[in-house]
Length: 336
Image (cartoon, rainbow, N blue to C red; front, side, top):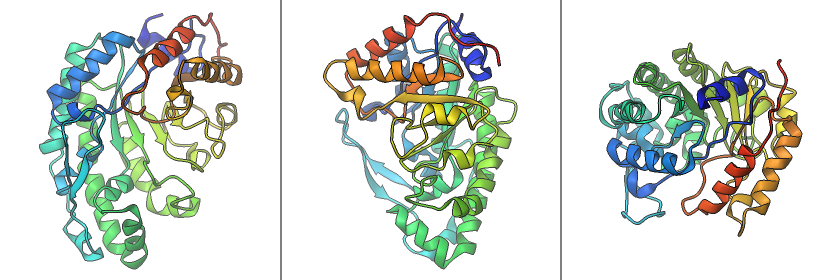
């Protein structure tokens, strides 16, 4: 099978010659321009030959139109530090208005998708990272708790900001797909976790805006919902219209791959602990996680991946060992 055929089949629950596999992570010293991001992405793809590419831009590109800025040291593997943010008190949410969807950091990311599609093997699907509107608001304050406090003290202002961000990102999502992405990787970041919101709070504050971005991506065949963090709300979001659900399935506070497959209509993406087994000396634990995932899923409706972005400095040998284990899998899966 080609990579595109394999990913499509996995999403639909059809037989595959082996599960599709991909990994991704930040390259902090090379994520500040479209050219650098695409160049680094292509270098990694040339080495590992993943079945799909999840473009992994700097997280704060989402909030740059509203004045968020980070300082980079230029040192490999060193996270940038927050330098400027627009919301210091609740009243500042009034200044968060709709911005152009194709300028600044957003325009840069549209260009990155276009360049990647031009230079990458056409048979390899691309998905672009997009945060949910509530998660984008979470980038506009110094600490997530500040946003939570403002949701309680000035809900009307926060809802106005959610509307502005949604109106900005709806055309952005359409533009990203037009530039060559096969779908979006919609990430909840901190917010779809019981450590941050109850299921009822998430339904009230996030769900309507999440679904607006997914509606903008309607027609794309490879949309993914990434439900971040521990104690997540994955099963509460199981009806979201996406082809795959991504989460830290190895975290004991989250649903397992097997549990999720019984509750969702789409495919599952994950199964390899990016900060656990993947970082251990040697690859035995990471390969064992793949084997456990294979046992839980039967290789059906499963895309092998990390539970979230892999840390910089992740041993390349461990990635290669997981890829080799996946490639050695025999034809598996039965039609839905």
